[in-house]
Structures are given as structure tokens and as C-alpha cells.
Image (cartoon, rainbow, N blue to C red; front, side, top):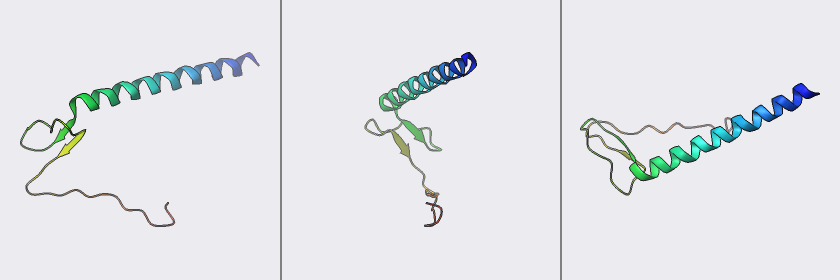
Length: 68
């Protein structure tokens, strides 16, 4: 019985650490933004993600009805 309590406690600790890291990274992303480009330019100040290219586009994955 004590083993299961220890495992449950460890799961709580890991979950708490994961949530804390997610919140910290979200805060960092909101503050600085991320830029994906080949020119090395900084992201737009109001953007979380700034993607720019003069020769390529963005491919968004598609799902069929059965995959959803």
C-alpha cells in the first residue's frame, strides 16, 4: 500500500513540475516571441510566432474525419 502512495506522490510532483515549466515557457514566449526565418530578423513585437519566407509557405497537417 505504501508503494502506491509513493508512486501517487511522485506523479503529483512530476505533474507540478511540468505545469510550472509550461507556465514559465508560456510567459517567456509572450515576452519575447519566436521568429522562424532565414534573414535573422527579430519577431514582430506583438507576435508570439513570426514566420516569414520569400520562397516557401506553411503546410498545416490535415486530418480525415476518421482520424479526428
